[in-house]
Image (cartoon, rainbow, N blue to C red; front, side, top):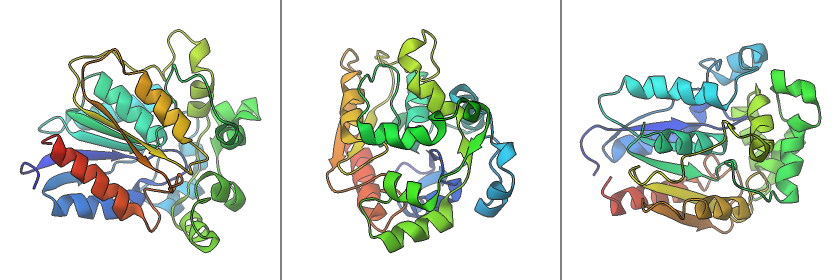
Length: 266
């Protein structure tokens, strides 16, 4: 069991509502943690309400989201463990690198500054926003087919469709532009303090079938931490795609994360 009341903050990525963390919250509460899953700035309380007001989420960038969660964390009684998926995993690394969290788990995280090579499948998913410069200031939604390719490629089509209908929301295009041009910007918001020797432990995961964040991206991210003596672990799920936090196999991922936290006495 975790230390009584250890806070855990879950951070979703693009195109999934915070409520998609519901089963994780129940599991972590059973293990003795005090979990929560706040949405991004502009997100409404429900999937349907967020879909009806896409303009509310438009224009927010990485720094806006990091500051939003930093303010939430600042109101907690102790530094939390932060767990994020996709762009939420990038936010986790920012928060951990800036000493706002006790530990972090970056599940198939969006590329931080310094990751040079993006496989074609990742570029295909990102092009949903990047193909039109105007999307930098807009909210962008996925079609069912785009979700199938980017998230649900490793699960049955029926399950992918069900997840699409249940959890998907419009999300700001700006973070995709910021990540895409991170290596051309000296002060990119996708830059993480990978050399921070005093930060807490970090677990990075890689999905072997992930089209949105291919395993090569997660491995490259792990290598960027080589100058820091702080704990940085990598866990690979060879048969999993980008839907690994919400599909029928989520319990395997959650169990692995909980096991890692136990190993690291967190």
